Each structure stands twice: as structure tokens, then as C-alpha cells.
Length: 138
Image: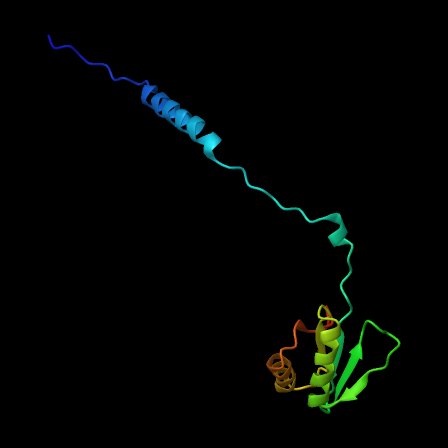
């Protein structure tokens, strides 16, 4: 009489335990070899330095260029042509190399005019140039 085999309905977990032990040994050996990352935190003194107010170039819809030093709020804006504006900014940035320049333009100014001013400043190595916008304006 042939013997009837029973189906085994249990899972053999011994191979899984072997794999887990090998992984545990690998992690225990390699953990001391990994150098912890270092984080360079800023000094407290550097966070209290406020940036200088920038020079503001205003481009009007009629093509006029006005320059105002925002560090001196009582000084009125002065009208310049392109060459005079560049000469003034070069002289000012030699005195204060950290002072930025921002360009503010009317809504009606053509994009090409603003790009031309940006290009002129870039060709004359004026540093830290940006655009001034009104947040949330539509």
C-alpha cells in the first residue's frame, strides 16, 4: 500500500535568519568605517550684518534713465544717459564693491530696453545686477 504524503503547510525561515545574520555582521563591520558628515553652521556675528541698500536704475517709458542711491533716501534721483550712468556706477562700485544695482522699469517699457540696459552693465563689468519687481502685482 502506497504511503500518502501530507502537504507541508509551514514555512521554513532558517534561510531568512541566515541572511539576516550575515547582513548584521556586514553592517557591524562597516559602521565604524563610515565617517559622520560635518555641518558648518554660520556664526552669530555674520547673521547680524545687514546688506547695503542697492543703487536703483529707473527706466521710464520715454527712455529716460534715473539713478538713485537707496542707501541715501534723502538724495533725489539723477537723470543720466547710458555712458554717464555706467561711469557713475563704476566709480560707486569702486568705493563700495558690495553694493548691488537693481533695475526698475515702468510696465510700459519695452523688454528690449531693459535688456539693453542689462547688456550695457554686463559689458562694463558692473557686478550684482538684478531686477526690481513689486510682489503680488498683476
